[in-house]
Length: 164
Image 1 (cartoon, rainbow, N blue to C red):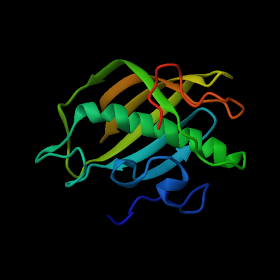
Image 2 (image 1 turned 180 degrees about the vertical axis):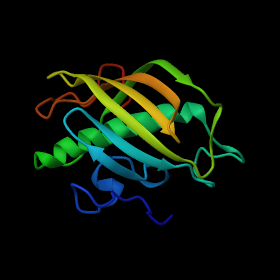
Image 3 (image 1 turned 135 degrees about the vertical axis):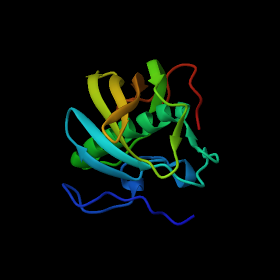
């Protein structure tokens, strides 16, 4: 599969999404980062016709949770890069109030994935308010709880989380 994911012209030089998220290959779902700052991120996804989760009509709306989680990962990666580091593995602990207004994200739709940091503790626990928009309409929204092991932590995953 040829990498077509990129960051558009903006605050960063164009780079593959691999520079912003630890996800690789067909499971790297974001296409671009439009904007990121200390409070949140705006990413883009063009719903693929032949993606891992795609069907004839598009991608099931439940995949929106992963779009949101990868936007949070890109936000964390942008912060790490700004501090001279590289993206780290993080964990999606859960989602709350995930609601989708559609059953499927249609093939070819250019989705805006927005994640706003509500809390990021020194212990690596965070909460993000997220939404997915298309054509000015909110297609999905929810809150994600995440964990990113602190840099000085010897623990790679929260207790009970899978380890790679």
